[in-house]
Image 1: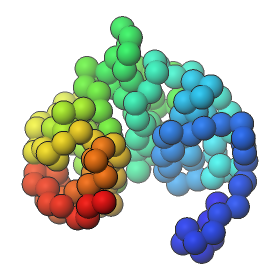
Image 2: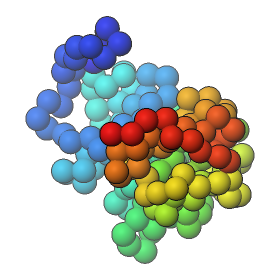
Image 3: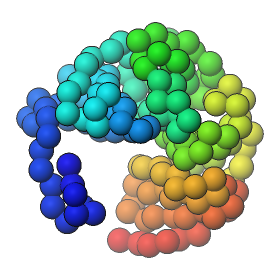
Length: 177
């Protein structure tokens, strides 16, 4: 945890016990995918205590609904369960809702974006059931973040950071390594 805008950090739980490659939050609820132990963990107290829940398949990314912390989406790959899965009970049960896989950004309830492995960006206004193509980031994504309904950032594997201010339709270089 950091109380000084990231200048310093103090461990609050699971130090040396988990390797979270994905951490997503909504309110006090935090979802984390521990890649070393292949487990999905959920915390209801901002990461101090954790419980393991079932995951639908090996995970690529997670996104928590900003309006309902019990509503979470998981992008899964690698087996017959590949696709986008939805839970309305904090990850205790899952339903496959789409065959799309990619990195997710859900900054506001009506704006869920997904960027696939080829860099194509898709928008869903219904929580992941239907998507329309918005644009492309111009490379393979390594990370994806939404700050508002219109502002999104994508990190490419070469270290380039791209920014969109129009909801993912167009992208400009924000920084380079």
